[in-house]
Image (cartoon, rainbow, N blue to C red):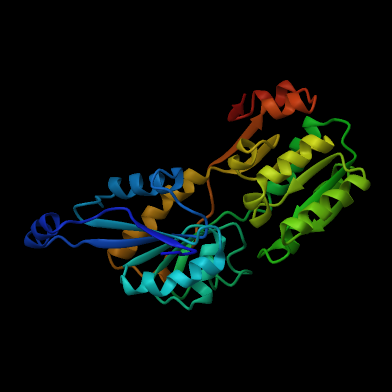
Length: 326
């Protein structure tokens, strides 16, 4: 059957498995993992969550069922699956990423939702406040204004002759204006000329590339969010063609061929989601669980890309890098 979205059951509980569980009066908790992107069972983020759940006593096949729901790269695709997700009556929905969280909001899902999002969770209207989320949603926000100046400082350290930096973002992103203000202030302190390009699609991104190249940008800073996560390969290819290196937040951006990233360790964050799920399954309301921020950060440097761009990585960066890509 042709479908734009798919559901994969991560654990199939047979009658033989289910009956002993009922006999022991062991509850089978159902957690639905929802993502716009196609999630594989060996996803590092899913594995981090599963491992953390296991440490908390939730074992698949014994007292836990995790089902995976994927929009196959499409927000509308995930939205079409929401009625099916609800029909399975999960105890909790893990919305993996901002777009999945938006799907749950747009579809007015009333079940407990534990989310991750790169947006400011209040500005994006995911929760009422970080300390008191209210409603049925809580989780982890990757939003961090203090990280933006750090990325600009690292890019300046990487490129001592840096004069002009292009800033690329996604206008609908919750907190985008605050990010732009933070980037502008940091650029001014570093003596950098800067210009912002807000893009919503691949054609708009290509147009931004042409424009920033004509502006003679020396480097690009890409805000964490939809553009960085959807088009890292496209940005890396342009960076190599134009010799304008790019930096962003998450390790995946460097793994896809960009020169450097500095930001939260996402596997750690997804592992933390298990703590929310555990407490909700034990009776705590999402409204009473404060939204958390990342506590562990990493710098990843792509040495292969740096070499292709004739960039000599300063020793000061190499000794501080948490990981390098050869």
